[in-house]
Image (cartoon, rainbow, N blue to C red):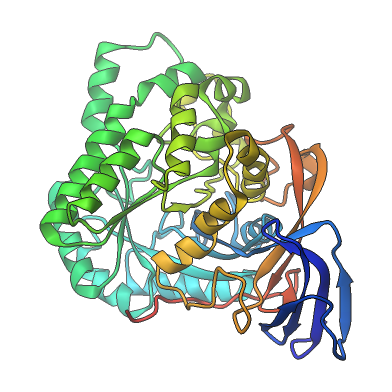
Length: 442
């Protein structure tokens, strides 16, 4: 298929609607309708399949440069595309060095332009060491700034205490860029561990219970207070509970600019399941009990979730091994199958696929000011989309495209399968190269 081809997908459903034809000319959707006529270079019969806009995964950790043995841009972007993704936003850690300077932005961009199969944006880091570099990173086109309100697990990516976060938010507000935060309060976690000391190596259950939900809520409250004080544009990542989402909604109703993300694993897994899976399900904040998961789905139905991102955060198998779960790396490999599995769960929770699709495609594109044609299916817009079909089977290790064939979703039954992904009118494969995306001027 060539970049200037005119081709058509026939008999495909758009978000569960009646079958239509969708034609593509170059990088754009040319027409949508019944029985489209014309001289097409190629026709694809997609009877029984659903066409959805490409996923904009605003939260991944691909770890280049410096830690490509954990995951790399080539393998990570291949997995994103297999999961329906056409855009990813790479986080400033766990690369070495982390993205705390303009040069680090340029270095990551150069690698991604060489290796990524899909389009990409880059987060800059907000740490005590990066405050003097935020403006320069903004000039390089970062999508926003990411801060950890708790220990990040890496000495080179420092925790943003309240004063650091306040100063960073003031700079980000002046630059017109959002601040994303990992919201957990170390003091609440420390107090819990003091009151509930563990004996010997920590089990998966010990880990899950060691970071109480109040640690997350305490940090969310502080972040919202600082955003209200500074006028910053706040985005709270991987919110795990309806209570946290309501805090964001209440602050927004009071005039604070704030949005909330959750991740597929917080909707797909519960504490009992995570204990069975073991270290592959370790993440922070941790997987919550079933009642909290059900509440998260209820909050989704009521429009309290603004975006869905995978928080794909892999590590070598050796970092997930041992007897003490507390000593293992926390992060879930999930960008390849999270969307398929959410399509499984949606009917069980009476959740329209159209709303889910918006949360992982158009909503993040809109929230982070990508070009208006990204994340939606419309005539004249970018031809970024994937095909979904009913094909019940079990997720196997052999199909994983990650650097390491491990995932919390191994062995899980799925009803839906993503069969093909197109980026700017071309099928994504090993020859596809993504472009660097920057936020559009408001």
